[in-house]
Length: 238
Image (cartoon, rainbow, N blue to C red; front, side, top):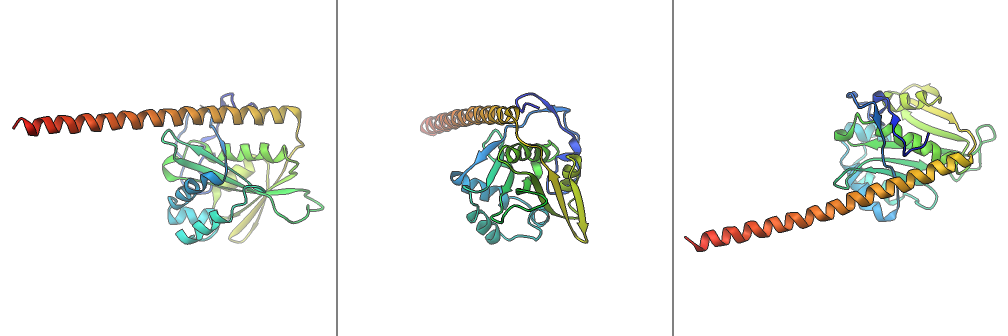
């Protein structure tokens, strides 16, 4: 499915890694997803630090401290791995996915693998961001020769495991932890075009938001100056 077309999103998939109760979402939506790099370091840190303790527990498998989150971001290898994000109108990073490629040789049975992890801030839940980031990562991975997408999650992270199951993944539970394995189809010309068009559309969307944010800052500055001048005139007239 072309990502610039409007797509149906199951509202039950939007909680991503958090396991939060889903709100009703519109039936149709398109989510602009951008690739992130080293220049987004501070935004990634801010996004992960905004996660509540319970959400950090589900995302990392333990209640990560601020220092541990900072170290995690510092170790991101943007040359080997891929990081994707969703920005709101204020250019806040509200959802993020990490597609990690292990250095180990390909598994004889599962082939080349990549591991998927995702986080969505609480106020942005119920919009299908987790599911869309998963779909985007699947497309990106298969276009780079990945044969199996792997997810390691806590068994209580039902939202993440549901996204995996809905995509056709095999989920294996081992007590408090679960592993999900999704076999990916090979890439095609259509899949590469689909990814390219999605990236271009997301970049266009980001630049529009960036321009709007700059204009708003200018308008806010003008408003503050006018208010200051008006206040000065009022004081002078007393």
